[in-house]
Length: 186
Image 1 (cartoon, rainbow, N blue to C red):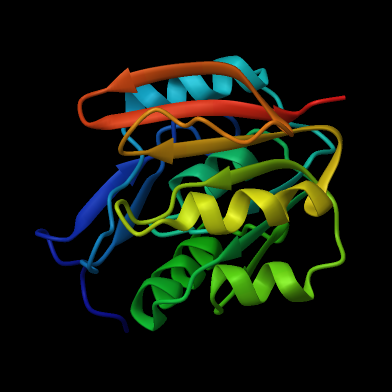
Image 2 (cartoon, helix red, strand yellow):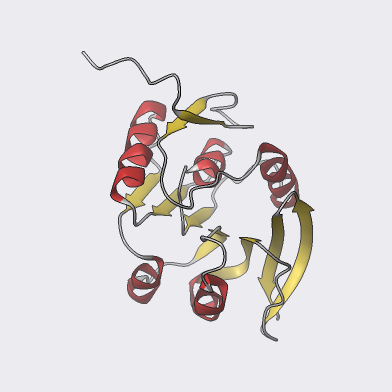
């Protein structure tokens, strides 16, 4: 018999789809900050409420809020990449709790994942730790992982100004978080 959940444990609520209103529990980890509910609602309004048949990559999965939200809204496949062992265990527990068979969780570094990846994704969620230069390292590599007409969602501490190969489709601000939807220039 498992121990009851810690009442002080962090929680995030899924906002739509088949798991709407389900709570995901997660522990503390350095730099872990779930995407706020209001920002996730805006993001999924941008993407369309349903993601049926889409393949998604949650590159810095953290709490899993973005990836589980995508799976709840019908994504065919969600690959979650998380380097922190404790956080990865929380992701596995939540996937098991939800019966999320379309979710694959990989414990690895984002750069290593991208170097070995051969899949194309329709939606890539990129919410890396702030102030560490991740966007400059990752955006050039994401083009080879993006399906035709695919998009990249980016959270950052400042407005994103990608190089000439990218187009900012939409952007917003909530508190200290800047969020953006990018596509490749055609």
